Length: 419
Ligand SMILES: [Zn+2]
Figure 1: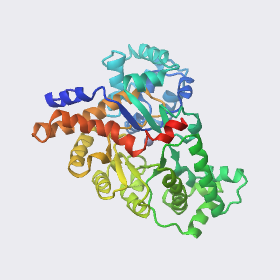
Figure 2: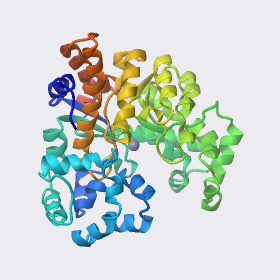
Figure 3: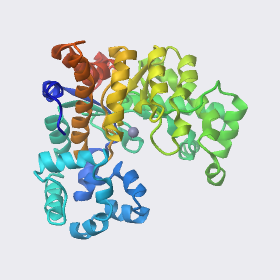
Figure 4: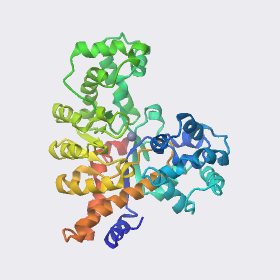
């Protein structure tokens, strides 16, 4: 993308800075390299939403994503009708940045899809994460939300969070019952506390939650949800909101761990699924009820961005984490960074988290896009004479590195000793 002279100067100044990737779902490297990849890995993950909107059936998407034996040319035939509809979208841009900057192709075509696939698979071997994340992106560490593989991370480059939301789902209740639990609310909450301590021993760098309408838990209501979760048929009838009495009780217990060990609670908000249910304003009663717990609100609650900014502005224990935003919409992200400069203290904002699971290559393009957004927002202030390039560069460094380090306590002594 062509930037103005000031934007370019600032982008170049921050091109090589150290970065914390403040949100990922990346599987451990060995899990990723154990599967074969082809060109479609670059268009998996969030592109799925746009491809579905463009008319691709879930079955076609599954075949493109999961069939490791289908030849690239055959995959191209399935992909080709939809690609023109999504290729200018910002979800597709990290793929196109990888194609251009790393593989040297202007775009994906019938002629080069085989070669692109071959080169992606050649690089799909031990050291992949180090090469992409550390060498290419200058990422010191990434915070990962992936409950399935929690204990398998190296705890240095990839640092897992404890996914508290899972505790309001049947699979967690069944794990509790299988451990000999009696099925009472007290027993379950005790198990939750012990589970948190257990994961912290392995390595847990924060808690992860999806924003939900919190109110002080009522034991009878929480107990009723716990009972329903023991029966898969009854659980299938529960909405997200139906689970919240139990989730509120779980949070009150789990936050004890956050308090004792100064762990920050990351809170997903907006963008995905029925985004009304994870409205950023749901965080207000939760943050007020736990003033001594630190919350990091994700994604500016898209599309409820102004509400999210105000939550970050008005509640001292809430910071804003713009992970994912740059690829949902760079234009909206630039506008909101501009408004954040007006409204949010500079130490209360994190600029980047790439939010991928398998497609580690896309972290690079996402980071380029996040840096462009920051450069564009700050360049406006420079062009208006409100700050100079060195000051803007220092702000960007804060947003990409210093703030996530401080907000998640990533350099604390205890981590260094333990890991
Ligand atoms: Zn995520």
